[in-house]
Amino acid sequence: MCVLCGEPLSDVHWADREADPAPIGVALAGEDRDGDRRRAWLRRLAVLRPVLGAYGLTVRDWNGRRLVLADGKGASALARDLAEVWSSAARLSVRMPDPLDPELLRRLKP
Amino acid sequence: MTPRPVTVITGFLGSGKTTLIARMLGEPELDEAAVIVNELGEVALDHDLVRPMGERAIAVAGGCACCARRADLVDALRDLGELDDRGRRPVRRVVIETSGLADPAPILATIASDPVLRHQYSVQTVIAVVDAIDGAAQLELRPEARAQAAAADWLVISKGDLAGADRVDALRRRLIALNPAARVVEATRGQMDVVPLLESHSPSRTADPCVPARHGAGAVRTVALNLDHPLDWTVFGVWLSMLVHAHGERMLRFKALVDAGGTGPVELDGVRHIIHPPIHHDRWRDGVRDSRLVFIVDGLDSDDLLASLHAFQRHLTPDADEAATPW
Image: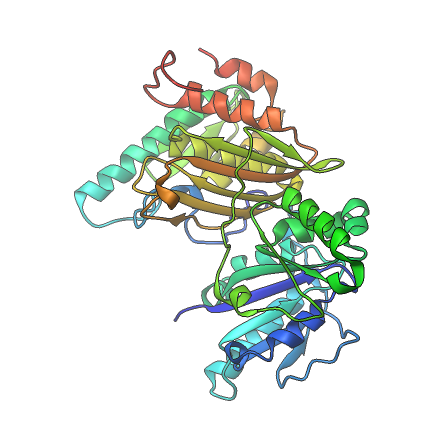
């Protein structure tokens, strides 16, 4: 996936392929796999919350398949995977999300 | 259908790309290969299926230069696929020669992103030819040359017989410093064993770096991180995707073997904004369990990268024991 253009290079984002063959974004047969996928999805949500919060954005789950990003003024965007998370966050936030941003790293500290 | 392997041959103007391809075409492995050339060079290719390719690019709305889709390449590859599918001419492999001033990233992005081509073709190897006479100066002065060398899995030093052993050795050191993830080989008088170049993807020759290591002159540098503690894959995915979104234009190459807590490492390979699907290995190389990350970056600071990765892993890994964690 080109994370800037959002152009799909694969049907499944690279970060959703934790343990082959169990991509997070793909429906899988069996309750165990679905449970693993759900847990991975919720963990990602938990990791994203403080990161996006540093940019004045909130994120919540929508049906276990999409994330909803929102700013403080009511604007929101849906994201299917991490590529869409960052392109949506860049549109909604005044500041470009950047993991090298010293202010972000300072805010991540407990 | 198994995707046809694609070998991309890049290198600066006059570096010897076409000579290398002519040498490759003598191998039985390329009996049923097609060759796509960007421009007609001085060296004629004696081959029955050579297709020209222009540089017509399709602009991607809101897109970046590195992943502008190459329309002529799409046409040429689809045309070759039809030839094969209709039984007119078998095409088991494709060799693409880039222009001397081309950044290979758009070619990789084109094949990986096209909804048809990505099922028919798979870039197996990127080979960059570097001229032993002018290569060092080109790497110093021309960003295109650095991008080509950074994207390569194999770096072939050409014209070593004309340049002399000292210059070849100096260039070899420079190339290893620039792209420690690639393997450097020398073509002597145009001759070399080209079969290994056709067989394997990414020889995975990772460096054994200091932590962190810094190489390279000017703004382009290699940052190699060797970490002996497993990385949380969820946190790492968030971090890397965010980094590539923010700084992909300056990440000429990214290659990693990541200990994500599995039975073997997860291999990742990226050029600019493009991250290829990870490959999961079921065992550790040499029995050593660790994570090795190599970034070839233009203008990014190695300390900043390391501090950021550490902060994400330390503060965002669920249930991480702050006192015990090595981050």
